[in-house]
Length: 164
Image (cartoon, rainbow, N blue to C red; front, side, top):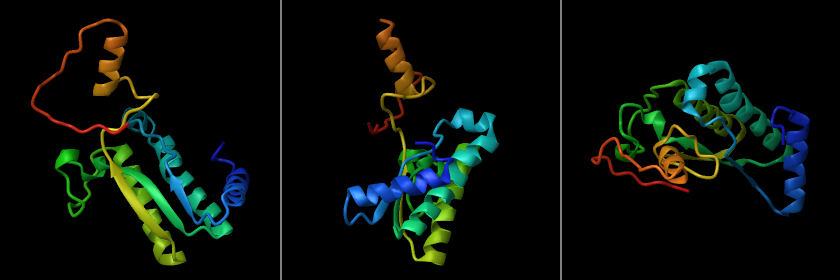
């Protein structure tokens, strides 16, 4: 679906509500999650991660859906390693991607205050899947494995959990 098309977005949310009677929430996973691409084109990052969030919230508002589950990133904690961050730590985004996700979180909190939305924000770290970015640890390991190359780790000290 083209999230840029506000009419299509509203119709889609409306048809989803009709398809799932009693639906009362939006699970918002759409974003540009490639930190490098966001760094290269901050305007596009803001459009994809902030403006489209506003459009999704407006579509929800017009359809009476007032609960949103939003996928953010642990990168909003900045200097902390994602696995060491606590929810009570101050947000200190260290790049454009993290800053746009934090801005989208702020928009959600603003909608919650202004329009009575309920929002839950999940700050994920180390996500991978079929479209994993090649420049991540998992992407590099998978690329090397597929090519029959040895998988080399830069260091053996970090321990991370990964979510598929």
